[in-house]
Image (cartoon, rainbow, N blue to C red; front, side, top):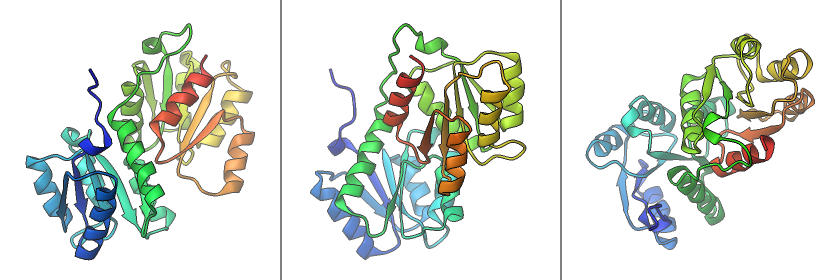
Length: 265
């Protein structure tokens, strides 16, 4: 029996102050066979709606009448009962600093405004991957005992990434707030995978990667960097430091699943 959610099963809440934009988004969703759609104009209305009828997915504008889509997502993530609700931001905002908080909080996708049908389909596929996690299968490795070191200075980002790893069947996860704390853990314990952020205080992801490759007794451990960094020069320096793979924030769970399968087998 198939217990997975399918595209036309999704209950969607659109949070958009413009009635015109509401209709445009709803029309695009209808064209893909999605009809379980509700609309509200503000973050306050969205939070009230969620209390009685939590959706599978929220599509929100960045600028709302009472706050921003970023703040709405952060408020949503403060309540653990809302952890299963996926969130897509629909916005013309391109400022990296403005969008970084959204990425850290675990947005499924950020759609440009206006978005193409292809962009929407990819975002919805990513939503289904989040809602229908597939357990990771590794040759000759017990997935439950796989020791992972998760490094990120954002508690919200760690929570989101940890939840994704748990959905894959990975249970042995140690959390570090920055590279220096990660070094302490690495000096005390052996790990089979590091998942790290790039931009962190004390010691960033590049410095941590360089330490692992050049100074630790675990120099061959796979390192996946999950980052919203866009500067190609800085990312090139990260790759030079010995990172095994780089994933964008927001990341696609299926891509991470495949990467882990490749790196730890």
